[in-house]
Each structure stands twice: as structure tokens, then as C-alpha cells.
Length: 143
Image (cartoon, rainbow, N blue to C red; front, side, top):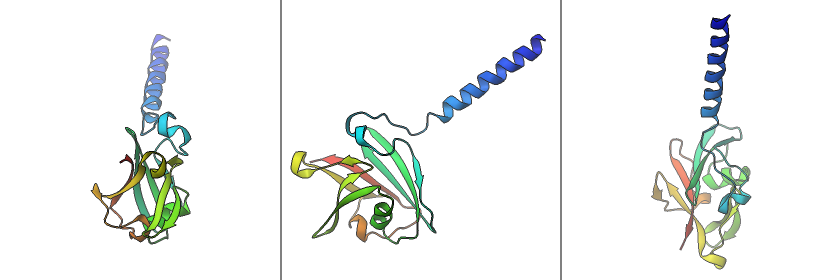
């Protein structure tokens, strides 16, 4: 009887430990800039032939979006799934909101910087073609 009880307790502890580790993925708290965030952990969105990986970083927190789409540009795919919002300007889509987090240059000189594989992108999101394997990033930046 003791062996069965010890096995049951051991199995329970292993399950609790496994569930605790599974819950420790890329997850952020709803504080600071993240208070209005739509997603707080890594998320997969959509269906389609192309896969787009976008990291969103604000303050010291970061989550990753995996977007499956049939769109051809990064901007079109992100707008399609409401990851970004903005307005059209002279140079294309000017992103003001990412994942529900607003950056307003007119208020506090904050903006969303766009990167490809860690390098500052030479084009805007709406004129950047999706290249599978490339990691795109949008980072909240204060000038």
C-alpha cells in the first residue's frame, strides 16, 4: 500500500512540475506599457502558405507572433490579423499601435522601430516582402 501511495504522490509531483514549466513560457505581466496589450504570451495567428515570425518588444518584455498568411508583405499580414494599426503617410504605413500598445511620437517621442534579423530595416513593413526564416521585430523606442 505504501508503494502505491508513494508512486501516486511522485506522479502527482511530476505532473505539477511539468505543468509549472509549461506555464513559464514567454509570458509577460499586464503592467506599464503592456496594460493594454492584446496578447501577453507567444501567439500563433491565421492560416496560409507563408509563415512570418515577429518579435514585439516594449520595455524589457518581449513576445513572439507566428503569423500564417497568404499575404506578400509583412505589413499586410500584420494588419490582416490586427497585430498592428497605423495610418498611411508619405513613406507608407506609419505604425502607431502594436499588440494594443500605443507609441505616439507627438506625445512623448515614442515610435515603433522595425528590424529584420536584428538589423534596422531599410524599408517599411508595408513594402517589406515576407521571407520565411527571417525574424522581424517591432520595438517600442523613445527618441
